[in-house]
Amino acid sequence: MPWDWILGFTPLAGLVVGFVEADSLGAAAGAFCLLNLVAVFLLFLFGSPRGRQLFIVLAIALFPVQVLFLGVPPEMAALHLIVLWAAGSLLWVVTKRIDREKALLLEFVKRVNGAADFEEASVLAVRFIRDEFRYPTAAVFLAKAEAAFLDQAAAEGFPAELTRVPREGSVQGRAFRTRQSQLVEDVQQDPDYFPGIKGSGSQLSVPILWKDSVYGVLDVQSRKLRGFSGRDGKTMELLAGILGETFTRMEDASRLSHELARTRILHDVVQELARSRDKRDMCHKVLSLLSTKLLYPVASILAVESVDPLKLGYLASTKLAASELKRHSRQLNREGGGLVTLSAGLGKIHNVPDVKAFPEYRRVGFGMEGSQLDVPILFGDTLYAVLSLERSLPFEPEDEELMLILSRHMAVLWALFEAMEKLETQAMQDSLTGLGNRRALEDVLGLEEARMTRFGGTLSVVMADLANFKTINDRYGHIVGDRFLKETASCIQKNLRACDHAFRYGGDEFLLLLPGTDRGGVQEVMKRVREECRLKGTEESGGILLDFGAAVCPMDTASLRTALRLADDRMYKSKEARRAGRREE
Image (cartoon, rainbow, N blue to C red; front, side, top):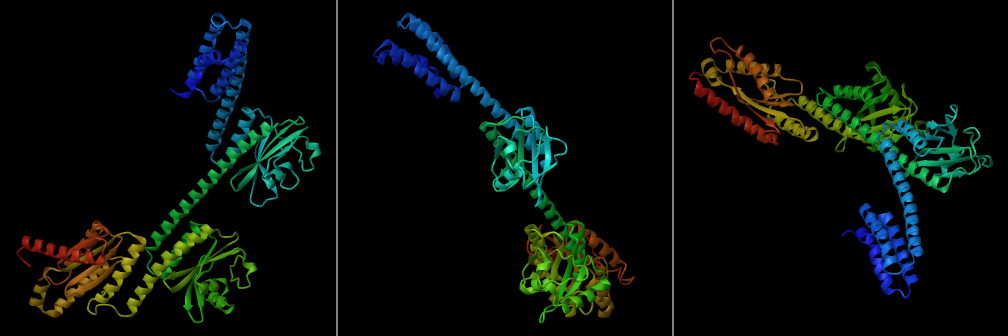
């Protein structure tokens, strides 16, 4: 049985205990009444409706018992009932008032939390204070950055011309600065009073804050002197606290939404980078996306031209034409390299809120003389370039984190492009077909594994060989066979993208690496290659025939080496199936 039901039986228990233990009839009746008063208080604070009903029924039922059987004078018993009724009524009124205030606060929370922004929440709060709490004049003033005024976001009962109040020289500003509620019982006696409603007598200003953040002030005024009680102050503080928590939640949601949007943009940028043809193409794509998607007004990429001494040169810029890059590079190095070279030398991100405060700053043609963010593009210990951003407003930590992530992706691609250029300069090609040789394959496999680890995606490995090559060699000789190999390589190269790789694996076997290509894409590529190969060769040979097998990472396997073996096995299975179905060849 719940404890409030036990309290409900208090009249019966009190009657028994009082009249058994008391020395006199008056003492027993008094103890009975006192015990019931305590029970009334506890029931109205914590009890359930059924417990209260049970108490009332027993209290009324025991009135005749006291008079008829226990000899209590009717006047005393009636007095006890009146006292209990009065106490119960008072507690009922108080409880109803408390319940109403709780309901109002819950409704206030629901309304302001449903707002879309600070202004809408302020309007809803002020209207609610007017309609439900019956304050005729109320306003919300919000702070904006380091402005000298608090701007009115919503108001009821205030003059239309009161659109803002100063932070210095107003009661509202004092509440904002001190983060303490300001109760002014006579505004004429307060030197900080800023004219509000006509004939104002008293004012209550409460800061809107939550934890360490203060957003503004909730202000109410009255034409009466001492028009606000301590209870009004507590109520306004509670409402201002709810409003402050709502503003904090809105800020957090807005910040999260902004970060998610920037993250999505960064994802798009990285995807676009993966389709770059070379370093210069990658840099132009990065700067274009930084300018159009992330709205950075000035962005440049400066590549390392020499290490000792360290010199940088403009590779691309949103504010420089291609014909101006070398001239501005010479100017920058002639004047000491500026902040961007300082960042490159340190190998660390460098965020300068005010470039004029740094003697190392060099204004190169388009400098904004505001803030500058320089991010080295590093892969391991190798510095390739520096990404430099400029704008009038200071860069936030979020900008640093975003550019740091971007620079790491760029560094991986930069290293890949450097390696590819190195492969070209080292003549890592098959002398007959012009395709990459086995040595080139080993390097590219390592680079592609690093790219997949960093960026994810798919990579298809295709192994192909000439189906009738032995017959051609035996019938026409090795000179014709070599020509067939060259024409096959040409057909393969013609149908690949710039990001794809083709190698002569050995003899008449060819290996293809197709980034971002799934099994269906492989079939399309090889269909085009095979159709074109059939048109090559000689009329007697019936064209060049290809057998091929493919494996897709990471669907078939996460390892490129394993994928190569799978593709080779599948190619031979395809060859056996073809031979089983055709007697010729």
